[in-house]
Length: 169
Image (cartoon, rainbow, N blue to C red):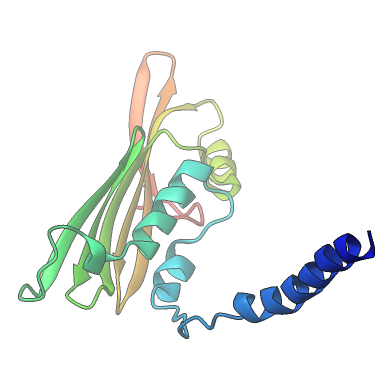
């Protein structure tokens, strides 16, 4: 009887010493580099709806080098990202760096500054349609513009404003 108990205890002890040595497999070192921080900082607005921010993050983290169409002989790559309410056309260089984007989103939730500016300047008007446009250039940052269609009864006007609610002339 004593032999039966010693064999399982001994094998468990041996297994207990062997498992930690097997679990210590070293992995290759990974360096994380934030190459698209300029783009994310330039286009980021906490008041924008989740789908817009999600698509912008997808464009920022896209790795063109892993795409099926990638060949290192071309200097630039154009990649389109779509959701039902908007698109982003992004340009990457052969190293995967995001060079520029052209973004167009329709009927998004407008930031507070724009809603307040419209209410102040056009008190009897309501916003019937809107388009959020962004042009990002790696060297110049992002230019954001909102095109709005305002209605008052049967009258309609089109206005353009920036992200601060300042109207174009």
